[in-house]
Image (cartoon, rainbow, N blue to C red; front, side, top):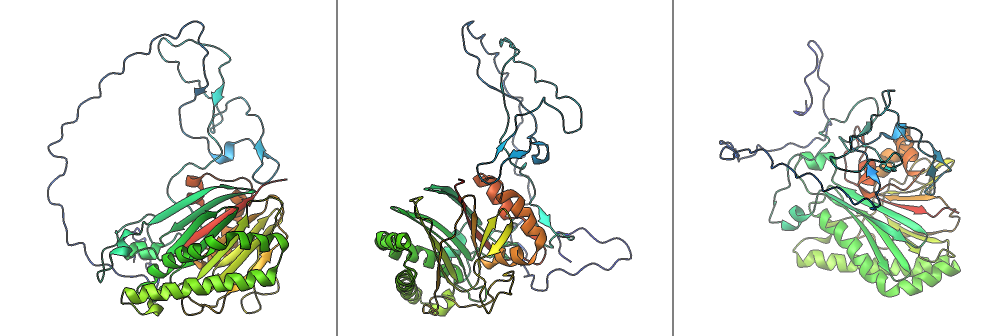
Length: 422
């Protein structure tokens, strides 16, 4: 039984944890004395009362203190997609049904009956990570052990547990996150996924990579391949932009395949300089190229290996990367192939997405999110309700992207692109 789980009721056989749950060694360090024993807690110094405001001063908005209003009690959205706005706030009402008592005014502050109230934007109160499904995951919801140097690999311990990024670019709003999986957290292993958001003039490159878990140095490969792809794409950004503008799918495929091959060759050379066989740096890769010009609706896609590319529209989820080997007639399964770089540089898949609509959400992800997103309807519903309505802030997006599903404990990287509404 996982030591972080509560014991089962008397007479009930405990449920076994994941079969592939790694083991941990005991921490050799032990704190035997209190850390704060010499500290003396003192009451804070009293805050001086604010000076009275001049009679002709303009009173600004007042922020109402208290807990953040839950999403379920926000006014309903008007419209759909990132442009959705909310109805005017009704009279303040407590979630428990009673009236909301106004906060007392500071001593000496002028009182007016018409002061506006600034309320928080639409977001869920941060807290423990949510999970979907009947049973909670067996692993703890937060990081436990911190990775240690193994085999002299300092690079692995320098990788942060979590990375989040985002911004606006032309017609799209971007959110990206890469998170260490529950199993790697529990085993004090580093994150093997990588995510990238980079701008090249009038072109945006976003990418995710998934280091192969069976290879000891795959975290070098995943982070290296997104960096090297950007290195080779940036000088050719204008050419790629022209190909997207003209819809030249064959030329786009030829050029991006050469760029991926060049990045893979350089990745293999880096592995050899580290004294590692290139295969130990095995990683998947998938990327999107997005023009800043709103008059160019095409988005260029390239991939090597498994993962996901999905689209969220008003009528639900679509799988844009289902093929003959990995998808059924409804497009509900993803490719299960495990082609990896730097070896499989000749197996690049490309496509031009030309039917983009205002309000669409493109979701590019590694299989840590693609597998549960495709196979678990509850996760699709959870993320669809949130990502299909409005663009979340960075912190909210990270919280949403980490929603947990039992038995899916791999690293998770995802980049979402919200197309501007009409």
